[in-house]
Image (cartoon, rainbow, N blue to C red):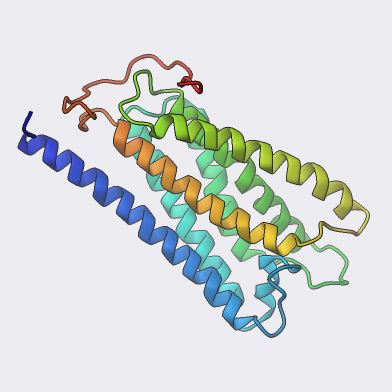
Length: 239
């Protein structure tokens, strides 16, 4: 059936929203690339963490810019989720606030140079980085479980990505924290951290896509318009 003007506006708003998140993610990636270029002579992208870019001129500002952009994107997404009924209760909001604050703190408080005893700044930096990855899957899970009758594959993808990200984060921390406690570390730590940063941006894009496709009032694949979100039930992962 032909799309009405309201359907077309809703579809355009969805495309605009995902495009905005995409450009924001690209800006955050560009900030990391800029830091890499600035620190190419002294920071090994395979072995050294992203936080070491703070030791080169302009690198710390690039880290702060990237983190702040992702913090703003996260807050915009969770606000839209609440507005459309795809988030309820305090948990998704609190989790995203923790994520946003953590991403800013990562840039505000630099880590320590190699060989230096751990300072308060480094402790805040490392705790914030870990917290950001730990709480982000919570938001995705809360959104995915609010979708009772999926009108796209996005909720199922989001739930699967949520489980995968949570498992990866827990596995990484389970290996990294004991090694860090004895002054050691994971081989290729820098590479793993950079991959994690890219995965974080991709997860935010998937979250945005799910919110915009499943929000009440948007067009379903059959051409109808969903008007309400029912009581939550888990998304069927086997579907």
